[in-house]
Length: 262
Image: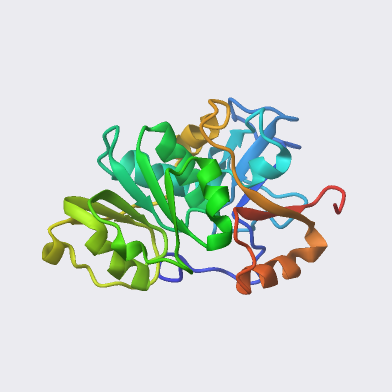
């Protein structure tokens, strides 16, 4: 991410959050004190590992009423990272076959739910122990990347690459001629679109208000529910990062709870 923006230190981390508006500036419309909201914090400023933050109103949406606070805190960044590639980048039609890499993760899990809602035939990759989880999210088929070879798949219309690197390189062969490979910012890769007769497009992810509001409507419509693997107190933030670094966060997000330490 260093290629896209720089940070000023010390830096409070955290992109997503949920809470209650305590104070509001003059001239703000559509929001009121005591509103329950989700926030997509500016990555270049203070983040959400905090009891209180100051945030532009354009980075807030009202909390979907059918989500818990923890689910709401895990909604926006993964949701936008799923919605923009699928609804604004890819050229879709009902019944298309799609392959979503990393389907058990925070972005992939929301992407599976959105793809199923759009009437797509969904294949995803995940760890073997997460097969039942991703099928429960709506995937029609799951390939365990730590046990099986997704490269044996064929005639896929669209691959959504959330990983890059070797996974990206091996994804070309599963696409049909004229297929689409949509990728997010990931590890470096070699663009082989011409060799395989496909298109390769980067999904430009942003926290634009239109995208945030679109994602915030999906839970209430029954389209998606954010994945929360665990909820920990803020004091355990370092432990949470250790779990991530060790590859122990396998489903959705870890959410930090500021309120009661639980």
